[in-house]
Image (tube, rainbow, N blue to C red; front, side, top):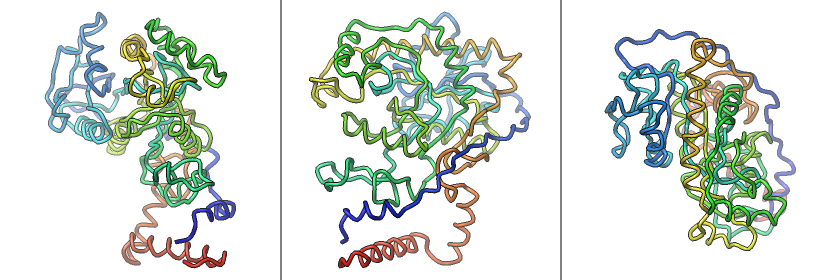
Length: 422
């Protein structure tokens, strides 16, 4: 087998046709509302019990006034909770990507709801990068990046010229853009709406804890982690999705690199979560069927713990044993900041939000499933290109076998060029 050290030679010869500009979606056509169903103006997406329960028993509205059983929801959370007038609802996905995709798919396909004008807000806790924010902070993402969707080998097996065991698909170098996309790697949401939500949340008085203050002060000795040593705030930055609850400086730096590469240098790796790309994929597919409006999605994550330790604390101590003190403030701030967003949208419904917020950026996935032109990805990733390629390859035999043959030919040619046996 040819050496991985060929990667530097091959990477130098490779070109990445990234798209440098983005075009937003065309305005959506109005869809007639169905009769006799609940048509919420706002949907809160929670992932597990503490995130959900912080919304119950509050003064502003009663989410438990209606409890609607929906087939296909998590067996732990089989009901959608709604206010008596149906204007605000909450769905609880269960943790991890499979639970999120299954729950949101069942919800958006349910005939019990009309979600064509609903605003969706993912409202959960997350790990946080101390280079960008700190525990207790409230973050609003433009990009969600599925960072674990890559080749992987153990860090202990790294060749000398690698800095990480994560390599994008169809490449042989961690610094290369993926040569293949499954479609869920990157999602971009409506930045204009994100900025409005950010402004609403910025009026909240955020919760904090003494334990969190003591632990985050440990980051002050490293200038790189200045943001992590400060108090909670509202921050515009992006979220990484991975089913693996990862922790540590090396993994965090690897996925920071992934976020930067896959968003064409635009994304800011900030928070770490398990569900967001899965939820966004389900909402986007429903949009394609005119059941939702993907341009009405908000991704809000509050920071409960650091993704890497401060100076003087070991990686395992930070993950398993340290009392970081961020969980309680993060849970509280889901409500404290999130309710400002809910109220702001409902208060401005008739004058602004019913018709929707026109995006000023590309909105959608890496395939451009909903149209527009992404500011990330490669031209041959676009769904129109994918369909043409699939149709052509269907005429020429099994796609997997053809890809394997093409890969073998490339590797053999590279080895031969260097006088190596393959």
